Image (cartoon, rainbow, N blue to C red; front, side, top):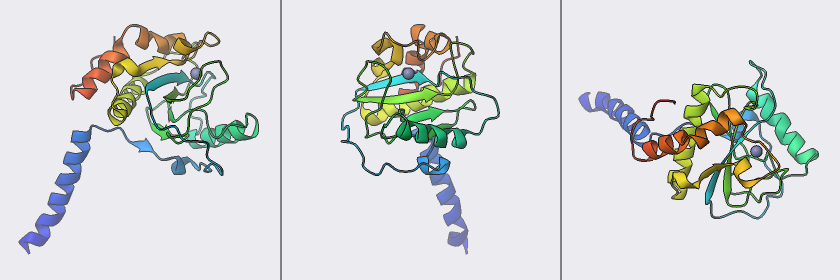
Amino acid sequence: MRSVLLLPILIAAGLLTTHLSASAIEVMPASTWGAVPDAAPAEPQTTITHITLHHQGETWVPGSDVPTYLRKLQHWSRETKHWADIPYHYVIDPEGKVYAARPENIAGDTNTEYNPRGHVLVMVLGNFEEVEPNAAQLQATVELMAQLARKHGLDAGAIASHRDYSKQTVCPGKNLYRYLENGWIARAVTARLDGQPMPALP
Ligand SMILES: [Zn+2]
């Protein structure tokens, strides 16, 4: 009787320990927003060397449904732009929830002159030329970037933004770019890679 009772406790404890030690942020799989897989996937990118920050660049209306937005963005990306998928690999919503978008092994797309091959693209919903990113979005950006850096054997030096590679854009918007400029994102990602708590927002 005793061993029967013990087993679920051990399982629960094991799951808890795994979750905490990995310090992983939950990523909602693309299936959760109704993604349609690419019928003919492009040649895969095998090596990720850069983690690159973008913003949506459009006003996000509070309360909008994120899965609906992602389905529309996927449809537009394919039908209008003739891209393989949503141009970004991950999308962070205003609550800091992370959604998988384009599969990571398919290089991203862009309207500008930089070549995103070898980059994993992280997009934050909103127009940060106009509004400020909130704490949940900033913290999710750091947790996701730390997770991606760990996965691909990178450090905070791999992190930059769209405008660092292209003269044709202000993306990710001045109010989000500020956190790259002042070094907070790099410090916070480095802290998380070292298993330390995230430093306070400046
Ligand atoms: Zn961009």
